[in-house]
Amino acid sequence: MKKNLLKEYRKKRDFQKTKEPKGIERKPRKQPIFVIHKHAARHLHYDLRLESQGVLKSWAVPKGAPKKFGEKHLAVHVEDHPLEYAKFKGTIPEGEYGAGKVEIWDKGTYINIKHAPLETCIRKGVVSVKFNGKKIKGTYALVHFREKNWLWFKTKER
Ligand code: MN
Image 1: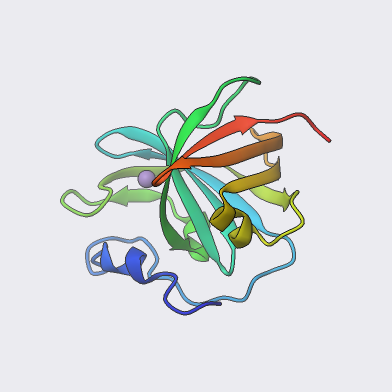
Image 2: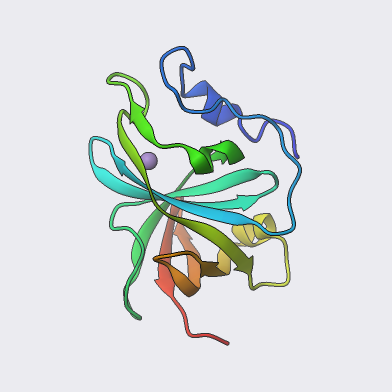
């Protein structure tokens, strides 16, 4: 994996105080995973995380996964999280970054529909994936529009 992908993640957290994983460097796998956390921080939100480059590329989504065609949900790109974070649930202590309860809302595998690595799609601002989760299934797009802001919406099967 590329060095320092987790630098920002680690800098924000005091691992003496939070039980979140510090993370170790991992090699990319053939069948990438995703997880959607439900995070009752100061403002309840969901965190969409897609495995790429041995880490979890992450977006904070205030309204969670879009349910119908035509719904476009704001997704704010946040720092890469370690792969182990996919298993994390628990309560981040008061006073720590992201303090509050973290639950796993859904998890599973995904397929990158584009003919480019996911990190390249992210750099270019258009991500298209098919989710195979329990609650979330089918194809969705994430499209960058400004600074860290993206839109997340359902797309038709191709
Ligand atoms: Mn969060």
